[in-house]
Image (cartoon, rainbow, N blue to C red; front, side):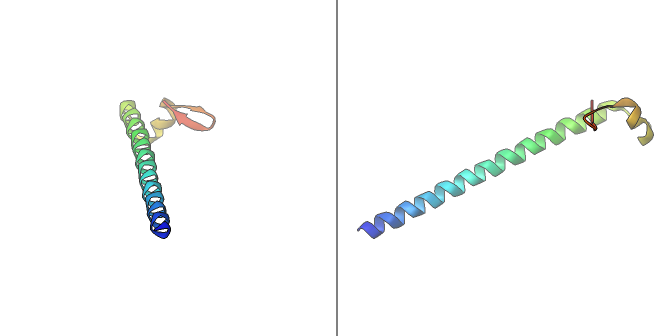
Length: 67
């Protein structure tokens, strides 16, 4: 009986850990997708005629472009 309880408890912990991990991965992916969408929207708003204009229309802050 005790072995059964221990086995069930371990199985429940594994399931909970797996669910937590999957939720964490989904949250991380959705955050990255949001960042990419905002970045692409900002780049689209620049309305560049050629790539050389990119440097003229964005400023640098900590060596990374921001809009």
